Length: 437
Image 1 (tube, rainbow, N blue to C red):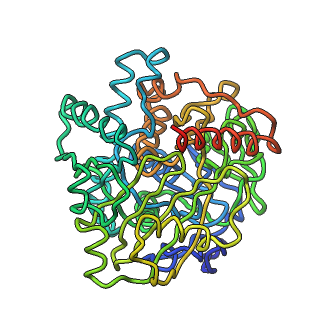
Image 2: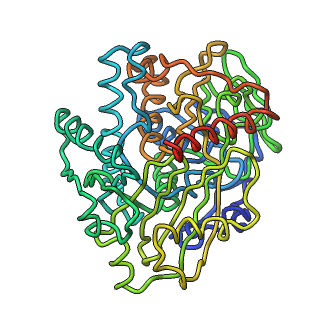
C-alpha cells in the first residue's frame, strides 16, 4: 500500500523563502505498484500539474509522476512574476506560422495570464496574487520602444490599463535612480509561485488525478501504449506527457538536447518596515529590467524584497548566492546596505536557442507529447501549453499546438559537456555588446 510522503523538502528547495512560507507542503505517496491510466504525466511543475487538471476536466484518467516534490523545480522557486507575453518578440516567427500565427501567439501571451487569473479565482487558490507590473528601461532607446509596445497592446484591445512613466517620474513606481523610464501594465502582476502550484496540485487531486512524489521515471518503453518504469512500480498509459523542462536529462535525449538548463538566483531580505517598502516599490508592482542578465524584483506579502536574476549558463552555481546577488541589489537600491538577507536560493530554468517554448509531440512516437523551454517566462505560458496538450490528447488535434510546434528548434551543439560553455561564451558576447553599445 502506498504511504504518504511527509519528509522534509530537498535541501535546494528548503533554502527558498517560498518553501519556508508555503501554506501547505503536505506530501503525496511514492509509486510502489503497477498502474494504468489514459495519460501519464511526468513532471510536477506548472506544466505537468496543469496538463493533468485539463485532462481530468475532459474526463481522462491521469497519473502524475514527480521525481522530487510538487513544485520542486523552477515552478516553485521562480521570481513569481506573472507577466504577459510568450517571452520573445514572436514577429520573427512569421515565416513559420504566418501572420495569423503571430497574431495567435501575441494573443496567447495575454490570454495565458487570464487563464491563471481564472484558475486562482475560480478555485480559491491562496497565493498572494497582486496585480501590477513595470517594465524598466535601462537605456533611452529601450524607453523609446515602450510607445510602440503600448500602441500594439491598444490595437489588440488589451483590457487593462497601461501607462508610460518617464525618468523624472520613476519615483512613482520604484525608489531607484538607475532607470530611463518604465511601462506600467496593470494586467500583469506577481504571486507566491509555490503556493500556486501546490494549490493546483490539490485541485488536480480533487479531479481524480493520482499524484506520486519521489518517483522519478527511469525508463520509457514505447509502443501503442507507453510503459514508464520507476524504482518501485510502473505506469502503463495510452499517452505520455513529458513536462520535465530543465530536468529531463537522459530520459528523452531527443528533447533534452534542445534545452539548456541555466541557473537563476534569488535573495530575500528580512521583512522591511512599511515606510522602507513603500519607498522601494510604492505601488507594490513586480518589476523587471531589460538587460541580457536581467534583474527582477518585487515585494512579498510580508514585505521582503525578493531580488533575482543573474542567469548562469556554466552549470556551476555561485558558492554564496547572497554574496553574489547582494551587490546587484545594492546597485539598484543602495538604501538596503544595512538590511539582512534571510534567504538565498537558485534553480534551473530551461533555455532554448531561439527563446521560444518547445511544444508538440515526438515524430517517432505520436503518443508522446511535451512542453519545455520557457526561457524564464514560464509562469503564464505553462498554463497555456498545458491546455493545448490536453486539447490534442483529448480531441486528437489542437490548432494552438500546431502553431507552437511549427516553430523549429535546434539542438545545442557540442553534446552535454560542451553545450553550457559554448552558450556561456555567446551570452558573454551579448553582454559585452550591451556594455559597449
